[in-house]
Length: 234
Image 1 (cartoon, rainbow, N blue to C red):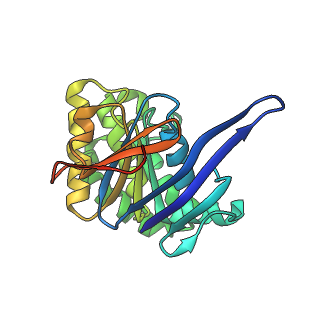
Image 2: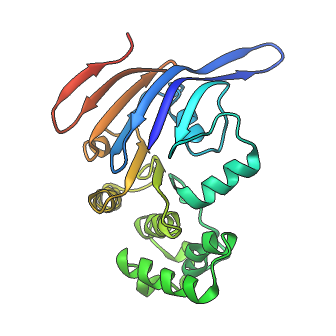
């Protein structure tokens, strides 16, 4: 599903050049649940943003679903973001002025889905995630865990090929955080491909594979189910 080879990202100012990613290579297969970990400044969020087509690489190759993404114009990146990628953010990124129903529906509006189909999908998704009774509420009327469920519903509503989660439990207490991780685990069990950035070893334990980054490079990959460390770069 995702093939990345020798990917680099350089940020430049007039005086400073910073290499956020340094020849990163990795593969994510369809149906995998992969976690990326590392200290602040390790490049994990930059990598997630490039995979999510929110940023572009300076060099290297990023192949998504058989198509090269490096060098793709913004219009093409935006189309793929809307159709193939679902985002779950630490801060939920819900629109306070819109109801839960409208927040979930919004990506389909952008994709030109018919109103009758939008209503059907929202009802089905809300039922699936246990928030049907909250559809008329507004984000500020919900708990943190409920807001993240709404954010997950919005991320899934266009049936994306991959879900990108950036610190999805970072603003939640342990109870709500655990509910979100159980939800992601259920989605994975039903076939979703998930890439998650986190600082939490506990959250990472829910995934199949953990990638450790430092200084813009991948240091190691650990398969959770086999408990084998594979050194990639040293």
